[in-house]
Length: 65
Image (cartoon, rainbow, N blue to C red):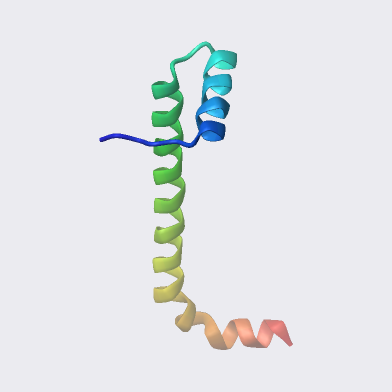
């Protein structure tokens, strides 16, 4: 895989990596792992809500009054 960054992105990544004493590749890989984990949790939560929310819709409506 090749990741193409514009000059600003590359410079920001370079600075971040230097501050942390890590390689640009390490910083980028960590960011990707965090993104995947965060979006996976969000998708799981959406699935659970889609399945369970209708079950409690009437009670939630009454609580909202």
